[in-house]
Image (cartoon, rainbow, N blue to C red; front, side, top):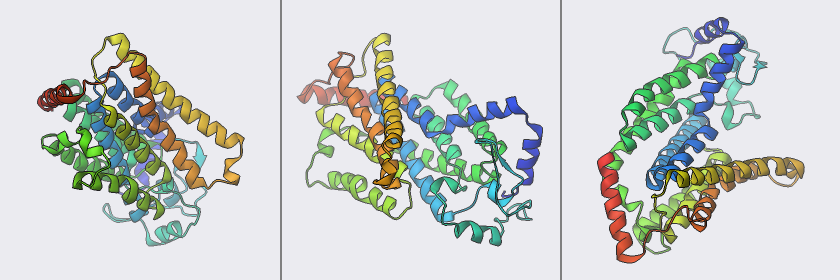
Length: 357
């Protein structure tokens, strides 16, 4: 599971064009692709279903990162300097050269693990097991099928999981054990997500009273998870500042939206396309401006790296709220009717969503 021989063999068969193809495929498991996919669903198809899928992906990413930090296994190019990181084109500088552990189910060598874990320059991106690309791809496609029950998505799900998993191995970014572990995590959370969709708890996510600043157990639990639990994980370095920022930004945006009333998903094809375009534009522009801006002003000199990483994720994620408000102002959306009519619309929408699940 943690041998480098299969990876070296796969890399020996490749060429420049095949490597480029694998890089394109592996991008389909990246955070940027996942965010774009869910934004398209949220603003182009159904706000509720998009939000639920967002939650599945966010929690899958968080749990994967926590396990990466706890397990702290190296990537293939650290175990064996013959493995090339084809994704970035960087040759390994690891002092180790070998095929990895002898047994199929054996863990990486103790000497390698000790050297890796004592490296003070390590970041969350250095950890190998489990594969985030594998877990998130499984969650995205499996979650999409659970929500939409589409035959095409059902066929595409195993294909995309296998392609992304293969690309991670070929590019030298993961062992077979890493991608299997990531897929297992994705399937576990997908199972829990499917059960959640069939439970009454799903309805609670779309009730405005659960997001008010009130002393009700639902409200206290929700705000505790957002404002206390996750920042604590980030402070303990169990999750990256980027993951914490994206989680907080997305949920803060959702709270601001639902407290004013969820947008109505009706609209023409042109309106839906424009909504998606505005959301992607604001998300992309905010990412670009923050990245360029922090570099230009030399923010690293007076802001910590973690804070910069947090802001570069939090601000783009929170643009979901700005996008929803902009679309309503441009008459691409309308707020759902307040009062009893709103409750009735919510009830009917949830009933229809439940049938599609």
